[in-house]
Amino acid sequence: MSEVKDMLLLLVGSSLVSNVVLSQFLGLCPFLGVSRKVKTAAGMGGAVIFVITLASAVAGLIYNYVLVPLDLTYLQTIVFILVIAALVQFVEMFLRKVMPPLYQALGVYLPLITTNCAVLGVAVTNVQKNYGILTGIVNGIGTAVGFTVAIVILAGLRERMEFHDIPEPFRGTPMVLVTAGLMAIAFWGFSGLL
Amino acid sequence: MNTVSERLYNGIVKENPTFVLTLGMCPTLAVTTSAVNGVGMGLTTTAVLALSNLFISLLRKIIPDKVRIPAFIVIVASFVTMVQLLLEAYLPSLNSALGIYIPLIVVNCIILGRAESYAYHNPPVASLFDGLGMGFGFTIALTILGMVRELLGSGKFWGMQVFPSEYAVTIFVLAPGAFFVLAALTAIQNVMKKKLAAKGRDVSKIGSGCASGCAGCPSAAGCGLDQKKAFDQEAGMQFISLDETEEPMVTDLDWEAEEDEHE
Image 1: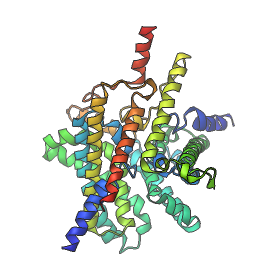
Image 2: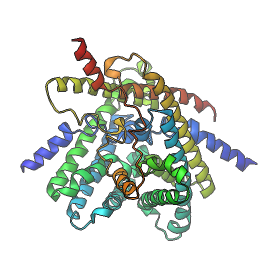
Image 3: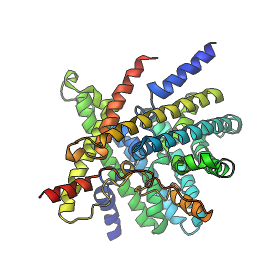
């Protein structure tokens, strides 16, 4: 039972307490760029959950069964980024052939995710914290869910903000950043959870 | 030697990656809790940027056009690994302070952006200095942001206590403070942009990076969005642009126009 409890705690920790965008600043570009509408934000979130879960599984397998036995762990950065880039291409082709509706929904966001630092960040964190493969996947899911929660909330706030009278210099991006800062304060409150 | 100084000036002032282009925001916000961390991250990135620019430029005639992005990534990742191992060996304290953000230099869009837009089309010496200029511009920006956050957040200037920490606004060294500092920075950028536009200067590059979304990103071509577009059109599928699915946001240009009407 304690293992299940640990996993749940890790899930809460990686999604809410140390939120990937609001406390680790990973994946800021899509967070700011693709958060104008709740619909597109949710699409991006879905694609990120999909890719991070797959990438943390594949990166974990390769690290534990290829790099560690061959004593090549110093190559982890190169291997991880190539695996992620290849994986995203592969997933895109697979979805295009097999599941066109899902491809229509997530397709646009997939190439943008290759350079999303959250994906590489999860892979590197899993190695640095010595997570096993399963723990790594749980950490990946938690991180991606945290990203989705943050980007959807921000998009909701931005939709409302369109109609507000904001001081001139703060219109556009600055106001979005202030909003993100206030959200970060709110998420700071979760640190009492664990 | 003219190109050398021109490239350095371009990177540090004219197209400063942080203050003008707003590129590479993830490390900018994450490591600027103190001036020293800012300098460390800036110089680490500079080393990777200059060396990868130099090598990409040297190899530009050998790298086939179709696989250039993976080739760039491998070159950049190799230098990041080298720099990471060197830091672990010689500067372990800096290495532990910057932590996960060192391997993440690979996905810093400044580096891929410079490779794609400059080093791949220009001779080695100019590319090397382009990398150095951009790197120094990034370092200076991170140092300034680090100094501001350190002073406001913990009352210290380069680690020296300037005023008692009871008077410091701790939130500036925490995560939310990073967003507020960047918000102030982009607000200043908006004002500057408006002033420069009134003088008739070209302002298209100001704030064109991460903050304005992927469509306006200078490294959009680098992340594969362009290839995808071409590929989709070839396959007879409609490319769903992010712009088409979104309504235009109220940008500063809109309020400029509004103001003109009032005048």
